[in-house]
Length: 376
Image (cartoon, rainbow, N blue to C red):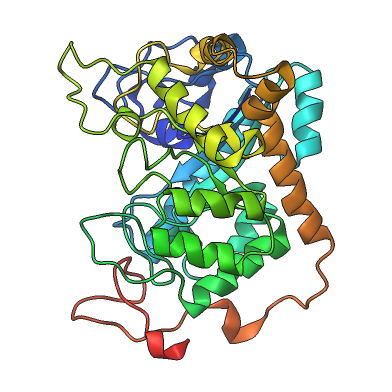
């Protein structure tokens, strides 16, 4: 099993059970209390091992309201905590920077930790910061979260749509392709999804999103985009937060129970639309309050695999693709693009975003201002 998204670094930063050091992640900690973010955990070392997890993306989530400089610091702090956690548990965890390292760690009986950043504001509108994170081992960037950035728009439905990618946003995508980093479109607006698919030279992923047709939340992926994922050779990774599985669920109503079968519905639908080569699993463990019954923590991943098998729809090799093979294939394709890159590395003013500010009191580090569309 390769899990495309978990907010473990956030828990290392804030969870009351982990405040005394990253060594605590090695204990079998109490399972997260429903309706909370930091009371208990969904991921620790024993649960990863029990869940037979080969690798997991640890996403350093930065609040969208953080200004660019604060966002860089918060992202860096969480990356360092994640690296420290890996160092503290060398017998069970290892940093994975390539698909080959994931395969090697799995053979050695260790869990590969793939580092990601959730929220493009954590690069501070600066390609040099992005390159620095890459040098530290970060291999995935979720472009945005619940706030628009100067260069890419979010799916957040309470904020006005700003379009998709700005000119600088296209530069960021090109740099991610050059570095061999995965472009993650979960949380992006539909316009941004479309613009990225136009701009990218490499496959892209949605690390924790479901099918919009089954649950019409803007966090999920609409059919017209799903069809383009096939052409892009990309990947949509089914996620667990109940509000993106069954829209309108009353989480406190005992008669409205969201379970594994509802997650499987999304998986089946995505396979029906895109084919089995374009679907994966991205839990969003430790980044959400409400998890379906039967999937309360990462140690329950085998139950999900068993439920996929019970559908009778999938051959063993198809299941292997869904639970990890597709992710490794996409990541490998992204690396091939990077390894064949021939264009010169951008330097100078092109590596930073400069723009006029819309509205009093905002600064270039703000998350909510509009680019000048006439510059395109």
